[in-house]
Each structure stands twice: as C-alpha cells, then as structure tokens.
Amino acid sequence: MTTESALADGVREALSVDAEAFAERAAEEAEIVKQELRDGSFDNHQSIVGFEYEFYAVGDGRWSEESRAGEYALMRVPRRMLELMGFEKELGLHNAEMCTSPQPLSDHGLGAQLAEVRARLEAAENTAGVEGMRLVSDGLWTIPPAGETAREYLTDSVEVDGVVVAVNMSDAVRYHAMANTRREGRDDSGDGPTVTLDAPGVSLAAETVMPESLITSIQPHHQVTHAETLPRHFRYALRIAGPLLALGANSPFFPPALYDDDWDGERALAEGATANRIHVFESVLNARTDADKVRFPRDFHDVETAVDRIASDETLIPMPDPGGSDRFDDAFATFRTKHGSYWRWVRPVFEGSSRSAANARIEFRPIPGQPTVRDSIAFQGVFAGLMQSLAQREHPVIGLDWETARDNFYAAVADGLDAEMEWIGRDGEPTTDTDELYADLLDHAEAGLRTAGCAPDEAAEWVAPLRWRVANRTTPASWKRDRVRARLDDGDDFETAVHDTQREYVRQQADTLIDGGFSAWADD
Image 1 (cartoon, one colour):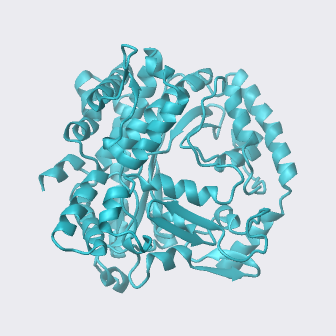
Image 2 (image 1 turned 90 degrees about the vertical axis):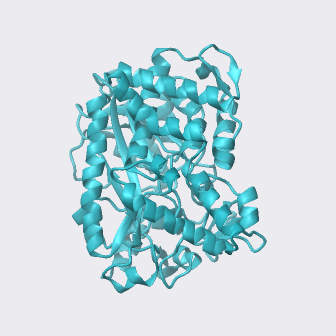
C-alpha cells in the first residue's frame, strides 16, 4: 500500500466518525475536566514554562544537486532526518518543530530552556548540513523550492480513491481531512478550490490548507500555579498580545510571484502588513469553518467557561479515538482532540500525561519565528515575567476594554512598532505613547522575573533584546522592509529585492542563530 493510499484510508476513517456522537463525548468529558479542576488536579506548586519552536529548511548550496540548484531555496526535510534530529513534523514537508522540556520559571529554568534549544538546534543543524540544508527561524518564507513556483508548491494536490491529498503536506490525517469536508453552500459539488489565502495584496486559492505552511512561529507556554487564576492571567495575556506582536513582527513579504497583478514593490511597502502570518493563519484555516476558529479570543471570567468554550467549539474533523495509552488525560481524550483545533491567538490548555504532570496553561501564539535563539527566548522570558507580575501587582491594564485590546492586536499586524496602541499605565491613566507603553510593559516583565528568583541583572539580561528593539524602533519586519526599500531604490525589481533580502537574512542568521543576537545585525 502506498503512503498516499494509507493516508487516504485514514482520511476516510476520520470523515466517517459520527460528528454528533463526537460532540456529545467532548461535552461529557468537559465535565470530567471540571471535576478535576475542582479537585485541584491541575494546580502546581510553582509556575512552569515551555516552548514550541518551528523552522523551515532551505538549501545551503552543499552536497546535493537540489541544495545547489537555488541559493537558500526552500527544501523538503526527509522524514528520517526529522527522527534523527528529534524534531517533530509540522504542516509542510519543509517544516520541523522542536518542543522543549517544561522547566520552573526561574533564571535556571529559563537558562535550561535556552541551553536546550541551543544544544538541540546545533545538533539538528549538523544533521541537516549533511543533506546540504539549513534550518531557518523566520516568520514566512519567500524563496520557493528550486525549479518550482510558490503557487505550484502550495497548491499541488492529487486525488487518491476520491480523497484529495496535498503533495507537499506532512502525512497528518487531520490536515488532509480538512480538504475533503464539504459544507453547505461551499463547493457542494466537491469541485474547485476550497481554501483562499487572503492577505493585503495576495489571494491564493487552493484545495487544501497547505498555504498555511508559508508561516512559522514560536509559542511560549506558561503554566499557572492555581488553575482558578487562569481567567485573570488570560485577560492580561490578551492585553499584552498586541504590544508583543508589534515587537516580534517578522513576516512583511510573501513570495513575490504570489502578489496580485496590480501590486508591485512600492505598493507592498506602502500597503502591505508587517505581520502577514496572522492573515495567512486566519484566512486559510477559517475557510473551512462556519465560525472563525482562528481569532482574537474573548475574555472568560471563570475557568469552567474556558472548558466549555473548548468543548463547544465547532468540530472541524471528529477524529477517531486513538486509544492504547494510559495517560492521565486519556480520561478526556475527545476533549483534547477538540482542543487540537481550538485555534485562538491566545488559548487555555488543560492536559497532562500523569496526574502529577497535569497543568492548566496559557499558550501564547501570535509571535512568528525570530532571527536568533536569544531573541526567541527573550519573548518567552518577557511573557512569563508579565504573567508573573501583572496579576500579582494588579496592574490596571486589565481594565482595558477587550475591543481595544483586539484593535491593538490588529494594529500591530498592520504596522508593527509604528502602530498606535492604547495602554493603561501603572498610574491608571490611558496612553498611546510607545515609549511609555513599552517602558511599563518591560519593567513589569523584569519585575516578574525577579519575583520568580532572577537576580536583577539576570532579569534585565532576559529582557534586553526587546528593550533594544524599542529603543532603536527596529524589528525583523522593519529590517526586511528597509532592505527591500534600499534594493528597489538601487534599481532591483521587486522579486530580486525580496529574494536577495531573504538571502541576506539567512546569511546573517547563519552567524548568529545559536549564539548571537538580532541587535548585531544593525551593525552590518
């Protein structure tokens, strides 16, 4: 049996699951989760941090013919190589994901996160180098595989026994199954594209969710000590989402050939977004849903409401119960499956392989991949520090209207650090001053890290990479935009300007990814 046939069988099995019975099981299991919450099963004696880190692979010009064919062109990662690296597969065949071991929130805990990422990434880069490829930490790739267009790579699919299979997508049943659901009023005939990537200047139709593989991210996790405090921490996480996204913006350009005919370099610079990753994820994954599953979520005022929202969220693919394990959270396995497609930019999670490891946490999902490991872990430290200090100090920004917090988020998507965002300072007064906002935000991040046990100089060091971005009004997105601007002024066409900027990004990263920092790029 071919891989495609086995995958098609898995898709058919998923689509045959009774959606109504699946939803009923999820609702029943939500009551189990609530009881475990009441019993204190999700409480911990201290805050815990974790991290997810996504990469894409490019050719570095060595060894293989494919690697030499295009300078830093996208490459598919062999599945055996992912196993050797200890990484996990993500949506596209070019993707690789690392998940760190949870650690206590402390200087040693953050140091362990940094050391683990550096050690594993160095080993992975050595393994990838044998195949003439490099792993890139970035928000959105722009150079397609050698000999292919971005459109071809993202839309290529085949039909196997009546099941649509994306050629360049990992063999995860739930992603392929999305292309094979038919909803009333949407492609009822089963023919034609079912997904449209919609972003400023780009509209790409596809039969699968493969266009989502344009983007990569980092995701800090924060486990709260007492699950009953999750709603308060969640409210704060929503209020800091816009400001932190603005600091991390890193996806200002698409592969140039994907832009609409009436968009050139000048228009992309004038009207394009700085954080296109948000547009990609929302438009592609919302295309197959009745309600927008990818969105800026609303506040909740008690932890049981968070559980109910996950259980009642629209079921996209009612996956069959895998069974066969003895995890603590197998008691609510269907609820966990529902959570897998509970796509919110900030989301609560309730899980654990054992009762002692059970946790209630917040996953912070807006931040794209960053230029260096040090900058990536800075976001983890700042997020954790803010989760520690804002609630403890009863910071008044919790009173910022939810609508304003949402508007801040999408202002950051459009304009990054140039966005006007509203904040409530520690004195309780509203402000739109960028320096005031970030001084307050980052001061509280440092204070939270000190509370967690970091010495003052150590806390300052974790936050320093993001203070530099504010002081210099420089983000990875603005770095890319400035270089595309300069290349256009020198007479390059838009495609050349974007591709050469991407190559410069990868070359800079080759020297700084593991041990350096983004601030060093400004000197070159």
